[in-house]
Length: 121
Image (cartoon, rainbow, N blue to C red):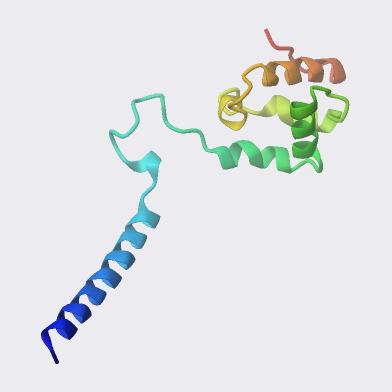
């Protein structure tokens, strides 16, 4: 084997090893588990957990997104409002980061639909 062939084989083996090691390390890391990465109290919100409760009610995500884009809350029903009212208040700024006024508007609308639902203060 010539010198170029040996160098080429060595580079291919090194490249494959780097790809597999990097891929495995990236899958093992969890941002919440890295100490010192986030200051106390600023741990990232689990968006999957935030969205999952909305997906339990059929059509709820679609109704909320339609009302977000149209500004009309007619399609949001009582079941969706009930689920919405159980969400953690810290979820909304991360779920809908573009419009901070939307969650309070939806909450006020839900207070009209469900009388026992708390209105936004």
